[in-house]
Amino acid sequence: MTAQLIDGNALSKTLRADVATRAAALTARGHRPGLAVVLVGDNPASEVYVRNKVKACQDNGLHSVMDRFPAALAESDLLAHIAKLNADPSIHGILVQLPLPAHIDSHKVIEAIVPEKDVDGFHVANAGALLTGKPLFLPCTPYGVVKMFEAHGIDLKGANAVVIGRSNIVGKPMALLLLEAGATVTICHSKTRDIGKHTRDADVVVAATGRRNILTVDMVKPGATVIDVGMSRNDEGKLCGDVDFDAVREVAGYITPVPGGVGPMTITMLLVNTTEAAERTAQG
Ligand code: NAP
Image (cartoon, rainbow, N blue to C red; front, top):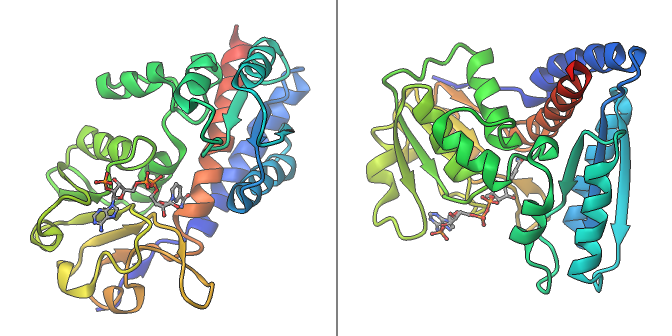
């Protein structure tokens, strides 16, 4: 059996068309959704991510500003800039691209964003609310994965789900969303003794480590849904995920490719969150 591909580009196209319609309606009422992207330093990967986010805003009728600062920026100056964006009525979402330079406390910076503009869903108020089921925003990457399950009618009720990775931005919120959807969830990480022991019994596996081939075909139950969040470069410099794609696609039921899977969905959900923030403001 060859797995059915979950195409993040195709799903994004549909969801972005809806965002563009909502953004146009808001703009007509004087509430054009606005996203501020803040980049500190010159990390080349961050530059690409930020450029893609700003372009996606432009392509779908959202207002976007990109604020670039040198790596030597003082933490206090960054906090002052966030305060300015918090007060700016043309900005509904604030995204600070991570990682920040080592001398800046990223927790402090994220906590400085008002939760109503925290479109990444990383503020402690939103992360905490995710635990109780009512956040203002879901973190974009796990939110995008949920949309992929929905689009393909993948039923999570009673499913065994394994998340590999336990970061605050992907692994942990992903596990909470799967739990919320009714799955029985296991979280694996770098200290897990035998990941395959868990994944072989899983109906759904979400790999989010950034380590190539962390999930190989012998670790996958036939027919399972395999979601690859990982992004790294192979020896030839080609973008690849965490999953041994060519072999795993022969046994899985559904699989996401890299590129063209979770990556575009993450940006799409950022647009969705920013539009939703603007709709809330417009409603007063
Ligand atoms: P992260 O903060 O570095 O976390 C990586 C996680 O993987 C950690 O929990 C770590 O475990 C676990 N891990 C590392 N090596 C492992 C191993 N050998 N076995 C099992 N677990 C292992 O990274 P992240 O921010 O969550 O991102 C994860 C990956 O997703 C990266 O490749 C990133 O580029 C990608 N990503 C993609 C998107 C997208 O839109 N496609 C968005 C965000 C992130 P410990 O906690 O024990 O160290």
